[in-house]
Structure formats: structure tokens, C-alpha cells
Image (cartoon, rainbow, N blue to C red; front, top):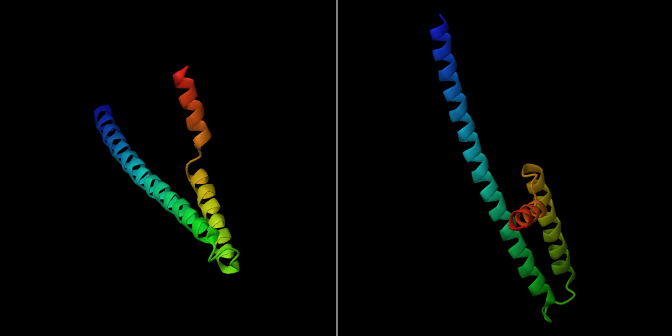
Length: 101
């Protein structure tokens, strides 16, 4: 009787470990996609900033609003990333400083 419970327990533990590994892989894929998306938004914001600074478009209200809107969206994405991934860049810097000393 004990042997059968042990076998069932080992089997369930293996299933749970496999499931956790699958969740971690899925989460890491999501994290990479989110990081890539934020990088693309930062590039887009920089491109709009350059265009807004050109003499031809300088002071254009539509471009100014578009630039403000892109900055707002970028900030929202960064906040979402911080909710999903609570470790921020400052934590990475602190960990790197701690390893160097």
C-alpha cells in the first residue's frame, strides 16, 4: 500500500515539475517578446523625436501630439513590464556592483 502511494506521489511530482518547467519557458518567451516590444517603441519614439525636430515639421501640432502619445504608450509598456517583471534595471545594476566588489 505504501509503495503504491510512493509511486503515485513520484508520478505526480514529475508531472508538476514538467508543468512548472513549461510555465517558466512560456514566461521567458513572453518576457523576451515584451522586452523586444519596448525596444521597438523606444526606437519609434526616437524616430518621431528626430522628425519633430526637423525644420520642415518643427512645431507641427499633430507630430507633437503623436510624440506625446508615443511617450505615454512607452511609459505604459514600461509600467506593465515592471508589474510582470518586478526586477528593474536598478536591481540589475545593484547586483552587478555587488558582484564586482
